[in-house]
Length: 202
Image (cartoon, rainbow, N blue to C red; front, side, top):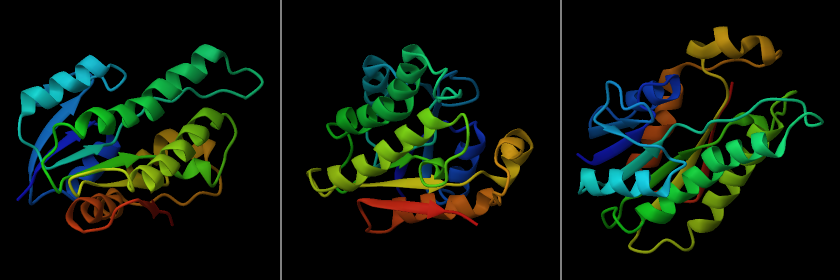
């Protein structure tokens, strides 16, 4: 059994990840701090560091959050770009950059991207760009992490359980059940793979 920090545990993607982490000791965290073990804001280095210090020993970090702004490229402001970059990109990079100093030897990080960087849709340029950046980050940083630390990223399409929210903006997409996405998180945490983008698509 591993001690796993799951960030975004209350969200749809966090619940999907939980399906793949059932045999582990899961420590939950979210930005609101409601109905979870800890509060964390991944856009704040201090908040990330405080989370790791409070948890103490842990073997894995699974992140399922990253706020994105949606608008046409011609209308996207620098502020909207920066909001997305500081959350979905730098927030996740900082989870690893800071977390490498706290995670147990042989531990693992699992980040989240999304299918829109390979199957783009209107209004999602910031989401697609930062998802692509995280996929690339994981592939490259896997060569540099010390102490046998592994890192992977789950790149899912829209969840069946979230289709009522996102389906209208994703015509032609086939949603996948949370249980299938949960298997990707399980594979990242429990196998020996590293530097992999784990696509979950229909």
